[in-house]
Every structure is written in structure tokens, then in C-alpha cells.
Image (cartoon, rainbow, N blue to C red; front, side, top):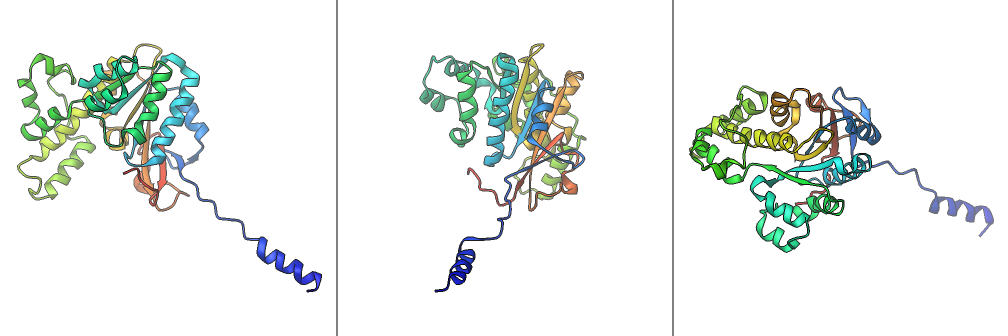
Length: 293
């Protein structure tokens, strides 16, 4: 075979077009300007409370949470705390005992009502906190009490014992159901035409509000001057500067709060209209991203 044929064959075999980039995420600011992770890191270093709104089954959320938490530790050291919706307040003692090395991880699993995706999605954060002797704060109301509100309304919480009330925000619940987050929930519930059983739409919204209020309460209760709280919660608990954010600023209007929302889009080149102004930083992930469950 002549040499020039061999050269041509080699080019056809080994030279391929440049592959299309396949980014796993893109960050935007509230106005839709694309930003880098470094911009997020620097902004987070200026906040007292970082609310990382996640999609619970999205691996990119959990990876970026872990990366940002480690980077914030490099800046703040022992002044950093981890808070999480995924831990109910009445499990704080169990969590503290595990972090202190007093009980085994098996006991934590058996007794702390861990979410099914704990091992894959939240364990890395907890183990890092444990290694660095950082506090982990269980911020959520016990689910049995949120369920009570959804069935009987917030007044039912008044029937609980003083021992039970220590695991929630101070009563009575001061919630404004005209806030967009709750108004939209009631609208959604009303659209079910009674398909949610006997649950009243307003009680469904109050059940959400009692979670938001309790998370805000335990964030503030466990945050001393000079400390930083990195809090993980479902994005809907802090989207649009509502819910947890509203309760935080209602009680502590001078606190510096940075919000991160997570959304899925078909494309990552621009922030779609419906996701503008959702948070200080909007984490956009491809819709076809694999899920953890």
C-alpha cells in the first residue's frame, strides 16, 4: 500500500471531532448571570447562614454540598456548624453521642430515624463533621408532630406535653399562609378535589410552615456570634427567599443569609424565566442526571 494511503487511513482512524462538553451543572445568580463555583465559595464565606436547597435524590447536589462544606471548613474551622432538615430535633442526643464516639454507627442507624438515602447522600457530610469535631444540628420537627398539624391544624400542638414542645419552635406557630410558598400549596391541594382525604388545604400548608419555623428556630438557637451555619434542606424550604428564610429574618433581620436553590433544566446555557430570582445562587442540573433513589 502506498505511504500516502497509509497516512490517510491513519487520519481517518485516529482523528475525531472534538467531543461536545457535557457539564454536570451550571451556577447562576438571581438575575440569570452564569457564575463559577469560586464565586459561590467567596459569597458563602461572607454569610452567617448558608441554606443549601437541594433536590433530595440528586447526586450533584450532595457532591457540591460536600465540596462547599469542606471549603468553608478550610476558612472557618471550628466556627462552622452543619444543620440539616434530614435530622429530627428529638434525635439530637443520639446524634451527639455518635459524633462524640460514645455509640456505634449501627446504633445511629437503628435509633435516629435516618433517611433511606443517608449512607449515599448525607453520611459523607456527617463523617467529615465527626472527624473535624464539628457540631451537627438536627433542625427538623419530629414528623409525628408535623403529621398532627396536617390532620388537626396547628392548635393541636398545644395539647402536647412540655417535653414534646422542646422539639419545635415556641408555640403558638406564627405563620402567614398568604406567603407564596404556602398559598401555592393550598392552591395545589384544592386542585386535588378532596383526593388527599379529609386533610384541609390550610392544614397541609401549616404542616409545611411548622417545619420551616422549627428549622429556622434551631438554626438561630444554635448559632453564636462569629459562627457559621451550613444548612441542608429541600430547595422548596428556602426557594424564593420564603419559608425558612422568612422565619429567620422575622426573628433575626440583621443575619446574613445566603440561599442556594436547585433546579433541573433541559439545557444549562441560560437560566429559564421560571427560575429567575429563586435564590442568590441557582444550581442548574441536567434533567437526565442520574438519581440516588
